[in-house]
Length: 88
Image 1 (spheres, rainbow, N blue to C red):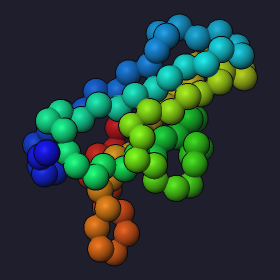
Image 2: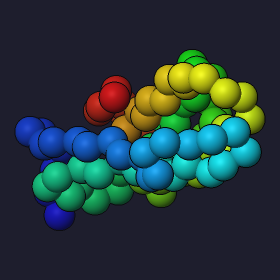
Image 3: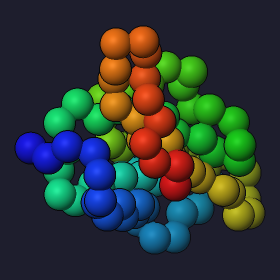
Image 4: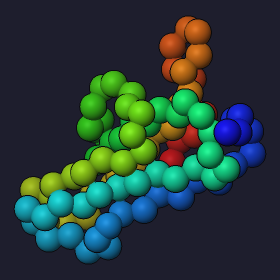
């Protein structure tokens, strides 16, 4: 729908509390929607995948107790590759 510009991003996790060996689903939501967005997720500074993905969500299995930092880069494909438009 829309083009990159002024938009909001929410980043949610479900469930809110995760125990060791439980799965957590992280979802990035861009509003208003923008066509062709790509996502790259990181846990504790390490990329979940080196490639950009079209899905705004990923599932993480907590293998260690404690706090973990999760963030997402949101980009859009351009002729020369992928342009980073949001770092969250």
